[in-house]
Length: 66
Image 1 (cartoon, helix red, strand yellow):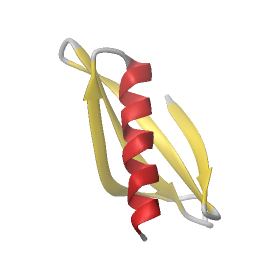
Image 2 (cartoon, rainbow, N blue to C red; image 1 turned 135 degrees about the horizontal axis):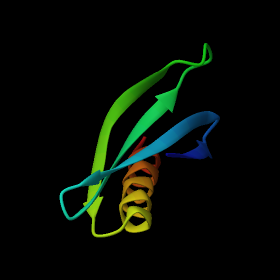
Image 3 (cartoon, rainbow, N blue to C red; image 1 turned 30 degrees about the horizontal axis):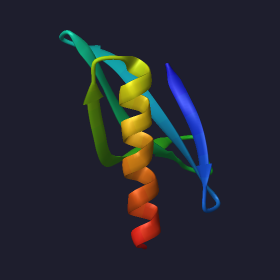
């Protein structure tokens, strides 16, 4: 399942999956042609929502730095 986030004119997906006793989320940028590319951001947490939120926070920090 993916959560879509629009930031600075780009579209990102936060993709979540179960990981052992918790969840892992990773971030991918959606390209204009509909393809997507991982940007190397991952986060783990006990729940899917927590993992998604942590990955989104990392993405926002990365974009603020640039």
